[in-house]
Image 1 (cartoon, rainbow, N blue to C red):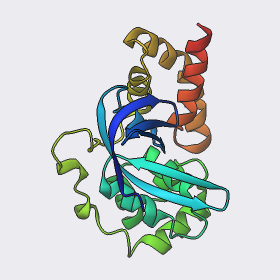
Image 2 (tube, rainbow, N blue to C red):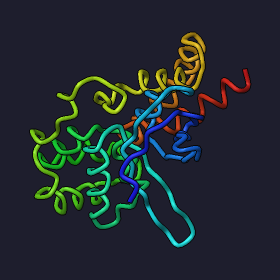
Image 3 (tube, rainbow, N blue to C red):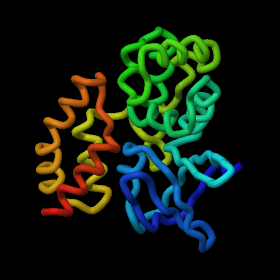
Image 4 (tube, rainbow, N blue to C red):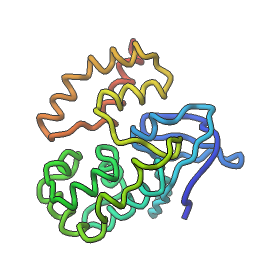
Length: 210
């Protein structure tokens, strides 16, 4: 398994990044929170998990080893694949995932697109004894650096940071965020949460047209 990659960030997109390692550009799928921390031309280290399918090899990247381990553990639950596991971590940092499971916070887990009430209850039942308590999550206590990411910020901050990481100015990002606010409100009303990755794609479409 490819446990981590370190190298220069060659490109950043709404869904991930390309990291140059030994002259080879590796495409890595990342959450918006991780993407927002990357800068083209700068060095980065990402913890990674390689998902092998009959017709594809997909490398998923994470802020740190703890997030990667949680990504892999989430997939041991019935009905949870890599995309859904990544969606969980796009909405909640590891500490919040552990808290939601240990306290049976169904509503928090339902904020993730693709997880309904029954799915959240199943996650809690299957993972409660395996995820550990919030005290085992050291992400917030780790030194600041590229390989560590702070807890997921409100969607406005996440979206603004992601757009800045993709090269848009603060003014342009602010305009896109304001225009997408009704879309985010509709997502919250429908699901209780916001899919930042979806908003990021829509923001890039808006900025591209402008």
